Image: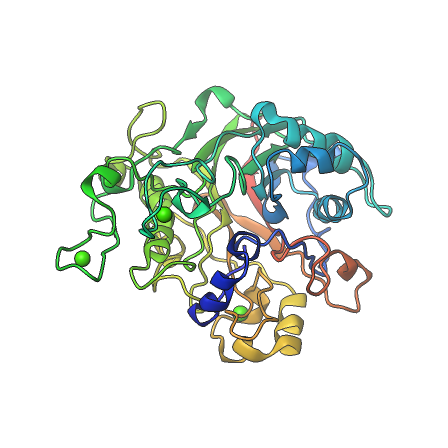
Length: 429
Ligand SMILES: [Ca+2]
Ligand SMILES: [Ca+2]
Ligand SMILES: [Ca+2]
């Protein structure tokens, strides 16, 4: 998702906010080598342990109208979908979250992308097969019937439960080579923001009352998750890994009340409390009415475009650190690329003042004057009990032929890069 500095907001507001803000702009990244470890289910060799590749990719496979994605994926001719699919084939994740993939009831778009793009080899890349996938409704584009942006009228993308022009825009899909324990999926689409203790509810600066951007009546309905939060249990060799997926709102496109920055912070906090479990997660309830977070010792991987760089950009200070510094999270190894530092050098501007090393960047926001520059926005964060064996970001340098998949603005695939992490699971004997 395109993130810009507040300076650029006026210009953005004047333009068509929806398409720019959430930019269905496709862009790609040069690739790094990703052949380091081969899980034994691929090679067929018996091993005691299993390395499993978890991945996240904000693929910009959102469209401007309901039905457009299905139309695009119904043929094999969509160049952007093909570039996205080839990136997935070149990196070959075992378990993959795709952000910005419009939700279509019954999984039609997810199935079309699988059959027409993932299972078809592109430019010599091997097809990838995902027997399992998971999709569910999201809050984006769902009319709230309330004036949530306080502009005096009700309706439009900014008054929806999450920013979007139609229900399901900017949704997400999980693909897996391993079985998904669908019966035990937990979704948190409808969790109310006010029910998080100490929630950073925004304040209307024009009134003396505190935390009153939303009225009491609105707070009784305002949801925390801008898309959804899903706990998708993956079954690997007799073990369960909870794949914790979400896509917190960009912390921009609002006013001095910073309702999006605050929501972004609390959307990230949700998973931190969830994996901490026990008392910290007591307030949590899912869409089925069950309470609490993960058990101590559970295995998990948090994945998604969190729209927060630890040191740069516009998210609230400490937002992503809620996860990075959580003692249950393994951040011992940060994925890197060679294309990120090259793009940062070539684009200059805000990148010149960044403090996060450019080799950690996962999103290419650098070209526009006043932009936030390139950020570390996309994360794959395993639990402490899952050792990291390898990791990477698919962002090849321009001299690599695969950089045609990531490219430069306007991007052939997405403005975000695929991030992957290989973790080791003890194999059942
Ligand atoms: Ca409104
Ligand atoms: Ca106030
Ligand atoms: Ca950067």
